[in-house]
Image 1 (cartoon, helix red, strand yellow):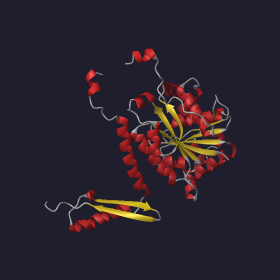
Image 2: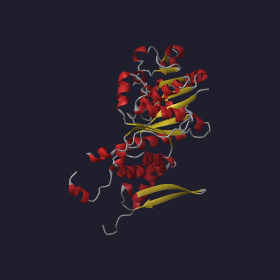
Image 3: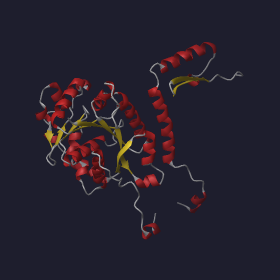
Image 4: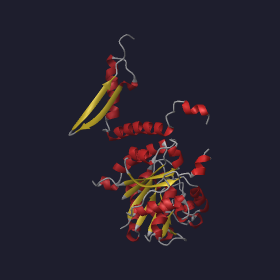
Length: 269
Length: 85
């Protein structure tokens, strides 16, 4: 049985797809057989971030409709063993993701994968609801910025009521916070919400903090999940998040302003 | 930064403004989420009844459902206009 995790946020542009690619790749690097699914029907992008856009033949909706089987649609990653991508369809039909269809695909994947990472679209429409519905747990991606935090809270409300687990009388699925685009200098200057601020408002456990980093754009430009850039701060922060996801304890990194030396303070701007 | 800035009242930092605004709006939206579904309709109907007797604004009726132990308390606040007007 696979663990199904939804990467969600409510607001767009906060780093869901970047995170889905990084977490899925990170899990596969640690030897877990992982599938990452793009639920953003009509606005496929995970393929670009994963660098497999030219290898897409069949997609998620093709599998749901029976036009292709899973084996044909899953794209095997060329860099990392055990990593597979199921791209979203570019159809404009909003109802293409039927609940039975999604369930069937997830059940089939569950048989021989360890993890299924569901990359949710922004918003609270069908795609987002379907990405969350069958999940065992959630990673809520949030920027330290008012609209993102508010939307994350909204999504937490949906996660608390609109999942299969809850509808079957179970507990709400656990959700953990991944704070992205964090800039410690701005937090220190009082210009950005701190980890503690966001944590206090959303009141969920923290999975990790990804610093604002040039490496993220570089990675998406190249179609390489940023976690593969092991030299970079963001890459290492994602590795830490994956480790914590798997139950390891890791201290937070890249969350403090580096202390300046004597000359640094002397010439401080 | 000029030397006189050191003597000025420090302005409230934007992050703390953000935090305060978020705490208020998030609390309000959570309360709305957890309230019963009939609350908005009931609020509208109450407003109509009140208006038969007193002319009040749309936001003159505030309703909250609080939980106190085993009890659910429906709190109703109606702001009546000043008599003099």
